Image (tube, rainbow, N blue to C red):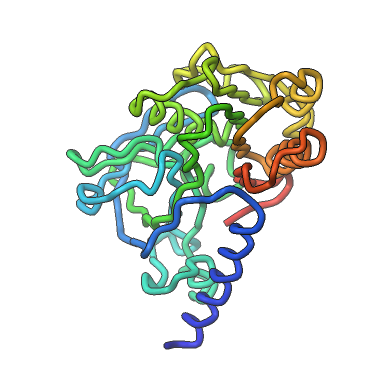
Amino acid sequence: MRIAELKDRVVFGAARVWYRNSMADVAQRTGHAQFRANVAAVRELNASMRRITLAAPEFTGYELAGPDEYFGLLVPGADGRLHLPDGERVNVRAAVADMPPEQQPGLRWYTIRELRRSRGEVDIDIVTHGDSGPGSAWALRAAVGDPVGFRSGGALYTAFEPPRQLLAADETAVPALLAILEERERRGLPGPGAGVTAHVEVPSASVLDGLGLPAEVTVHERGDADPGTAVLAALVADPATTAGLDYAWACGESGLATSVRRHLVQEVGMDKKAITFSGYWKLGSARG
């Protein structure tokens, strides 16, 4: 085994131990896939979000690990060409870092909004914020035919059975939230307002235009305030929302995810292993 592969396995082994001890069970893949894809369509959902369709033959046999499946999007780097990292490496971030700087692709993680195996396509909804990051910069310029790399990830939501649930998301986690609610409906399970309480925090409600968010989902506008402040204040002000919860899922900006989890554990008294949380991004920092 190569030294790089050994280091990857050590890092991922430590991460799995942390997950098992710190949060609810997540979906784990037994392997990973990496392949090239092309942009098949681009659609403006609203002024802040674009839906980009990727196509590849490999999608015809792809199986989702869970409804909020995430994956690594690899886009052309400094030299303008798409170079993929070693597909055998377990740690894709480390594999990218080991590449020559001019060949290193941009790497960002997104939710698969919809998989259409019959057509070999996936949709991804990307929140755009100018050129401040490689994902947004790429999404704003994406055109049909553009090449990308797809690196399989995993899924966080596996809790279909617990009856009383709280789901909290910001704008970047809305695609995952919608995918979860749709999968619950396909399984004949209760949705928002019927055992599941869903909260979405956004800078402005206009970010949600065209997404089809159910009316039963509570929307909080934070304006220029820090992410997490509006939804946390709402949960604190209405203790009935969190009383008797069996499970919670909180994803989005790191401050939102961690503050909701902290409140549920320290103030509500929930077991941390009944909570799934993930910082999709962190205010003021880039995450590859």
